[in-house]
Length: 162
Image 1 (cartoon, one colour):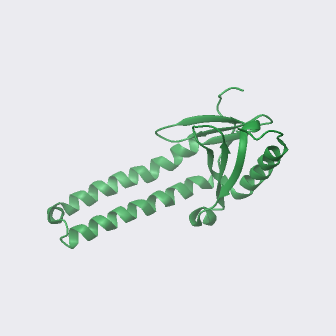
Image 2 (image 1 turned 30 degrees about the vertical axis):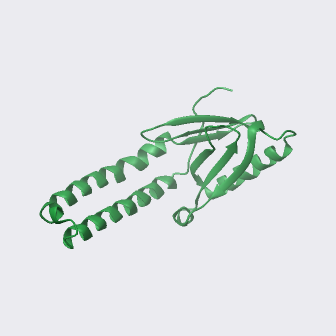
Image 3 (image 1 turned 90 degrees about the vertical axis):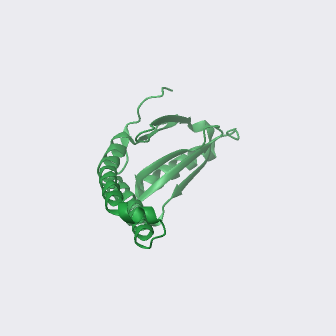
């Protein structure tokens, strides 16, 4: 098994999902800055509020525009007859491989926002000290098919995968 780039991309809808998720986070930050500045809770912020908000909006816009496209370019996955490969991140990029014989559990997660975009996250847990492999941004149907396949493989293993 080679630690190589996986061949499959995540769903293109993941870009919109990551964009909306980032925008929500930045809206919370802007709202917090407004509340703290306008209520006088942080007196120093009252005079600096326009500058602080301008800097926040510029940084937020850059993050919202760049991050989802960059993550989509980096995030990949693949499941072969012998292993599950993942590549993820945007600043801190990670490439991992898990032999199918080492799989202990396979889970899928769909938060409320992921459900809106028909996406899911698949988590493959092994005995590795590095923790589980996570594949974010999968089409919900692709995720379910992957979970079904990997669950069958894990169930067919004769040992306890430890």
